[in-house]
Image (cartoon, rainbow, N blue to C red; front, side, top):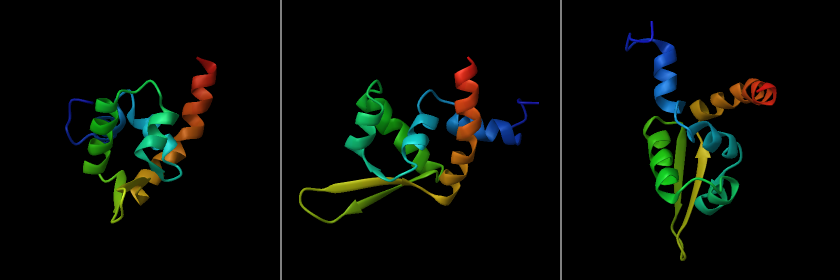
Length: 99
């Protein structure tokens, strides 16, 4: 079933199936700057955080807001679609406690 490219599960896993994606979504329940995410997920490399944020932006899960100020300020937040992933968190947390 997962070989079918139209499979809904496959579509979701393509976006959030990586090691870091759901953690980023979890910590973006409240908008954060890049540095806040780095503090929240200290074991992620800068390269992986940037790569995952770009991927989540590409799929319209995360939005990036640039503020025209000095020093530059960028805030990441969840889109409406991104917020729908938060509904999965209680089940993931419950499952994680059982493992």
